[in-house]
Image (cartoon, rainbow, N blue to C red; front, side, top):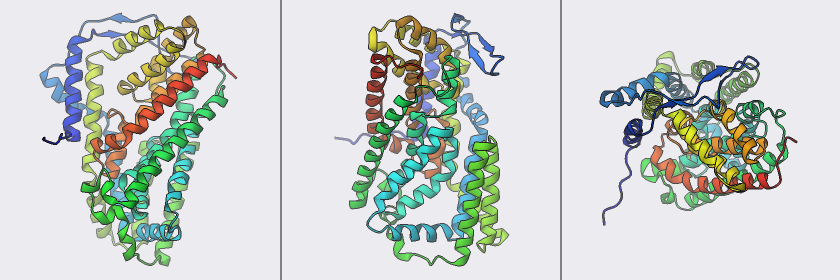
Length: 463
């Protein structure tokens, strides 16, 4: 029997582009009217305004044009990945990162698995408090280096950063970009109903930690159990490189101190000054060059390391643009609003607690098309909040359903620019990540369904 061959990431994404393009001929084109909320400055949907429009199906050449258009729309993220990849390679060339990580891992000898829950919890705090998402990308190379040095694999290194932040983001205890926006649109007190979000977060976090630790243990015992074993050298998975540990010199310590200061400034900028992709790329570029020079590299060596790092990350950087092509096709075909309209009508016909669970699953589907948390809230909550009133679901439950529906699948959908950028930084093909993460997604969705149904049963309210 021939072994099933999983398509290359680019092939898989382009097939989705083609399917969506065909959908523009089948799904009626339709739009909601949008208006600017003077109080908040947000562009919201008028829930009563859906109407069909003249079809604009995506043609043969438009399918191919969607890829360069997607790359132009995602240019900021694509070049951010190139800059981060190049800057990190400069820092790595100083030897400081390998020496520092080796020191940490050797100190934890026999207790390496502690790295997983501790790191995941730290990043989950970022996710649940200030909506940490794009910011995790810059930490991925160090997460991978830390995990592989500890005897795990790059998937574990990616998960402790990305999945850690994702469970906090989805748990949404104080997430201003999802819960904050959705509650304000639904006319609920800001961050009200926090008790159930805390309970939900705790359950989701425990399940995620257990899942990653269980996989990490299998890889630690036998590196060949790694889903990405054939893509990396065995010593990059089994931690054998620690046998060649370099001494942590004074120069190394100085580089690591400067690195820490830059990261502290980066976090301050995100939380206090609203820094985003452009500012983070600027900080990372400066950090790479300064750390390289302090670490003893001459300007030519710094430039060579930057180019080498950017080259090595090209696959992951460009895949962000290919993934964005899916959204380009749906937008040009004017079918996103039609999908939202039909899904919302379907929810309104469900009985009892199933209607609350239906809201969660509808948002899960919509997240494939609108992976932006605040973007989805502004597109759907003006529709879902009135529907919740009509079918006897509290608005707080509707927000919870949106919050989980938006948050969970960010870890698996190929239309998520953050996920594709993350995998690019880790040099992990999407299909391998999918194989790793899909069981956890099943567990999260079962938990989410149960929590939303419980919320409906107890009449989850504003307080």
